[in-house]
Amino acid sequence: ASVVHSTDLVIEAIVENLEVKNELFKTLDKFAPEHTIFASNTSSLQITKMANATTRQDRFGGLHFFNPVPMMKLVEVIKTPMTSQKTFESLVDFSKAVGKSPVSCKDTPGFIVNCLLVPYMMEAVRLFERGDASKEDIDVAMKLGAGYPMGPFELLDYVGLDTSKYIIDGWHSLEPNNPLFAPSPLLNKLVEEKKLGKKTGEGFYKYK
Image (cartoon, rainbow, N blue to C red; front, side):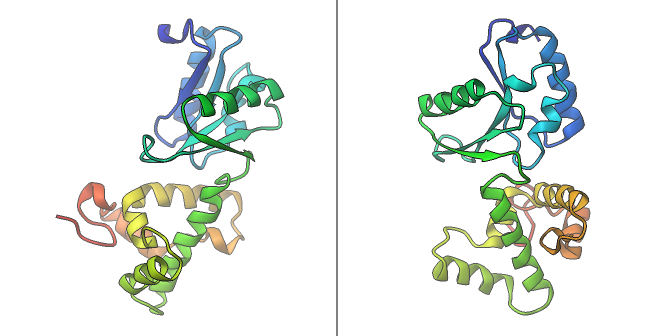
């Protein structure tokens, strides 16, 4: 906690678990100077719920970087209903200062990129589950037909199937009637079997 005594900005990038993040922010809130801005790098959780764990809701926002961070130029700057304009502008300025291209978004599930990307990946899984196309052909189709660098199954394995399941489960709990957020039996089965993608050597594909 002593490391935040003289900081102007704290960026959190720990595990995607709201309770764990809130506990961290509660602790840091006690030690950080009053002017210090807090930001979360979450890709799927509500920034507002984290801000509410602190006494600095007006000095709290989101800074969502993309992996691999040294190569990816984008950062999503998230403004909650309580984020002050001064805080928002400071987060945008910081993003530019570290060589990123900031885009702004309200505190909506998935922000911009994941709001579009996660349902796309889940629709690919459902297409495969229905037997309409093989995962290999779906990946080839999206790379050659849409110009994507990776197909959806390659991307799921890269991101981590456990991470993808955590995101979709969280969104499903918020909007249980939204078909875009419906859980996938196949994804759930792979996660249960600890086949999480590249990091475990097997997911939708096997890796040496």
